[in-house]
Amino acid sequence: MKDAVEQIMSLKSQIALVTGGSQGIGEETARILAELGATVVICSRSPEHLKSAQKRLADTGQYVHTVLCDMKSPKRIAQMVQEIEEHTGPINILVNNAGIDIPMPALEVTEDAWNTIMDTNVKGVFFCAQQVARYMSRRNHGVIINLASELSFVGMVPYAVYAISKGAVVQLTKTLALEWAPYHIRVNAVAPTLVATPMLDTLFSDPKTAASQWIDHIPLRRLGTTTDVAQAIAFLASEKASFITGTILPVDGGRLCH
Image 1 (cartoon, one colour):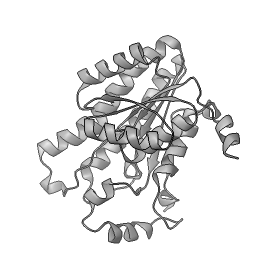
Image 2 (cartoon, one colour):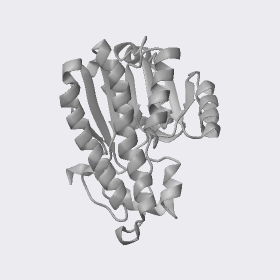
Image 3 (cartoon, rainbow, N blue to C red):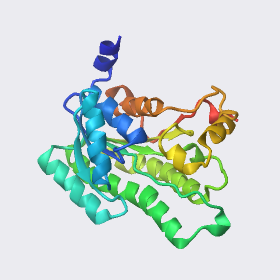
């Protein structure tokens, strides 16, 4: 069965860049894309995280390339994309996964916190898509998948700035899908609910209590997993989604049905 699925969604001969690929959703996405045959490059601003992720992925039989990049720097993003295009090959798939959150009440948000979140979650996503699309447009083909969130659509305390940034990702996805359709570049996004990742420990003082409260609002009565999200990304990256663009795919167990 596994072989049949891999054949149906084969990504052989494809080169995929996964930003924020050294942990969580990004790492699992890199694993699944590689498992489906893609040559995968993961980026992170931490050399230690990249090295650890590369080893973990190798232990599962999936080799990935790594590159350092701070997604807050458009200059570094441009350099990274050029390096991959010249030394690894043409980027066919971009997974704009890198993101950050700094939970705090709106009355306490600082300019530094605002800039950190927006520079990573919005500016970084835009300029990475722009740089990759410059190459994709010349080839008249490509797939870009952005990471939105359920908070792109619903409010939650104390995540005002994060919600704003992820709302922007939705509008960015729709607009780029329209603008780049003539180049046959498909642009979509996935919008996960809370996912069990290491970030959970940094967001909540008691992750177990917070998770149980979140689950009360999810009809399927569980948190998402990194695999749930990565499999949705893999589908959107594949030719099985060749007529899908400008779509925001919730991966939320029914959370947004409320």
